[in-house]
Image (cartoon, rainbow, N blue to C red):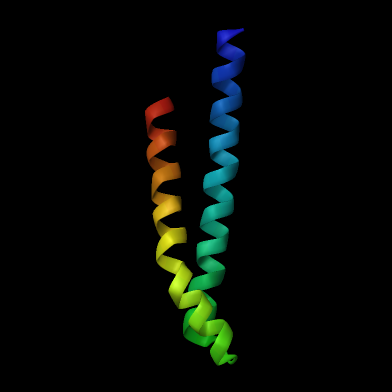
Length: 65
């Protein structure tokens, strides 16, 4: 049972890191290429937090290896 939980954690963290990476990529693109000033301001405000979450998810993945 313990190994199944570890495999679940690895799979979950892999999905989380992948989703965060995709979101950061989209936010970065819109931060530089976006046409809507209000949206660009929102993205620039929240991008650092998303990048932080991505780094933490990668840290957790490294811990489970």
